[in-house]
Length: 517
Image (cartoon, rainbow, N blue to C red):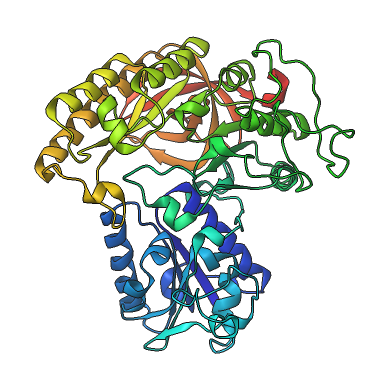
């Protein structure tokens, strides 16, 4: 059997898709190659969120073709969904398989190309450009210089690829599990809904199965993620293995006899009273199910949109020692006018209120934000509003992005595009501010004892002292003196900040975080 190699570009969702693709090949008996140069099949799982992401993908295709000219190069992911013919025309590309067909990628790749399109007969399995054709002809893939393109209407796509993602350097510690994909928002700058489709959720019983399997394998911290994680569960219907009712609890036996994944309805005294019929509790229900039905020691929640940070979610995170004190809340802009042009669903004062509530509930939590500069029409005064808001709020880190026009999005056609040099200068200003806030936050822990999980990395500092890299509960890099086993919880006393990390000495090894729950 041939060997394969999957190279991922972009966000955690793309990495999760890549892990699921690897699982597809492994289930068919293929071996994962240790390097691109050794693989017979190379899958490039692309991103298209910016023009530079597109450039990175094209450069990777050329590099793989140069270094391993005999390899079959299969291009998939968001760039493949958005512009398949552009990629199919590149030298060395054997197949382009969009997100719409990614759940069949190994099958398509390994089958005889003349037969691959008939392998799936479901509605979503239709090559691009053939959607209006008769069914018999629509099942035939298009050919561009003998390279097959498998892309169809992403909004007809209902599959969700799910497999744990492991950082290559930390495969023994913090897996990431994608539980939601797609997005129903229509931000004017964003191409993601058009390449990932509508919001869809991994069923609760599947999530619990994956989490319990990871716990049984010895993993102690897990990250749950999604394209729009706060929307988890909104698309699930009764009988799909984990529908969440309007009050945020799973249906009991009398409500939903087909479900076998109910959890305790014990009252959460520190959380606001639940109201019948509310829909902003569904992510909270998922989190409670993981806490109640698994023995996972630490759950970390990835990015959640501002308006999905309900009081109940904040209170649950603040009161449970099994949830990492880490909130990532996309901001994009502090200007009301810019947010309106972006078609964002909140106003600056809404955002400010959410951040202030998070900080009041969790004084030592990490609070991060995504911020975009250079959006079309962003004036000096509008940028100043963003700058002042960031200065005022208790962020501990920032992800700053320069606006990149994406073909077909409303923002790309807007007037008054900001000059590149101006956008880059604004980016620099915010990055420097973010670094100042991060440093100040880190320095506040000097002399204190803090919990962290050991990662599978050792290194030397500038004085050639050996240390083990760890990650704190509140998302700070901590270098622990000496050699320590990965996947172990420790307590360490912070001595000082050095090269963007806390430097600390071990004070205790914790057998389990469950003992503190």
